[in-house]
Length: 70
Image 1: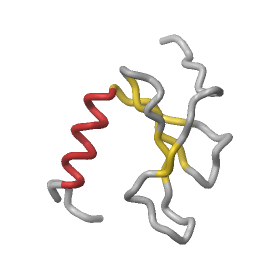
Image 2: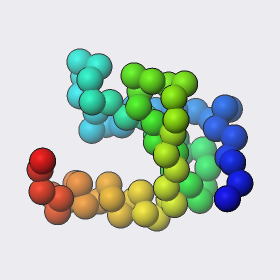
Image 3: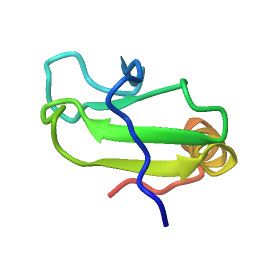
Image 4: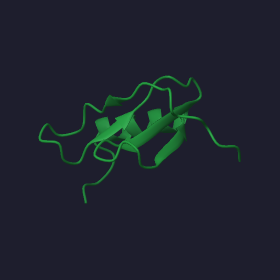
């Protein structure tokens, strides 16, 4: 697997993140086929990348309440 350069992408905070700075993730819409995700409290740390369709399915499942709470 080849490394993906994420140094020049634009990040946005997820609308599902809370407003007090905890439990926040950031995502980027800059890559058509991939959705990078990172911890907003550690912007220089690692990022996970998901196929855009997989990320979209996950977000829709969250919105629809299909995932049980922890």
